[in-house]
Image 1 (tube, rainbow, N blue to C red):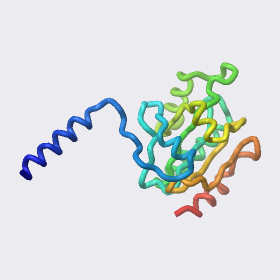
Image 2: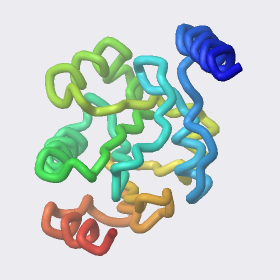
Image 3: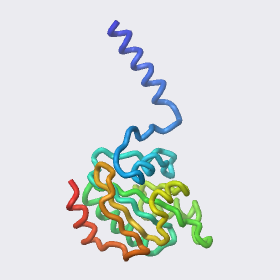
Image 4: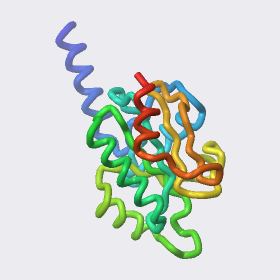
Length: 173
């Protein structure tokens, strides 16, 4: 009986692991915007999900043509390289604004500047969940449970300095 159950389990795993549909992020907790983002798909078609090892998830709202966004993403890339518990997700919404960008420009920008950046093209529903910020770059910092800790909305204030962002990240366990 034990051998039969083992074979049945192995067979069912083999059948389910070969499906084209990406795995669901599973049961999530945290703020509604974090949950909605976790169920979004990245440019590769995979669910963003959560990363168990991440003590912080930083969501950077950007477009490939935005010079301030490029500066901010470079800073986030450095922070994430120094600390593997920091996860960065790019939320792209204004890419085609006034014909300044395109899907091709976005993919090229990510490949050339931040290949490990997980990018989500925001749907209107996801954008609304994030409060529809009217200017970029904007940034949201979530703790390991998906709770919003800090937001840096460009229409309200300038982006954070590296020192300011590091101080915010130090408060997270």
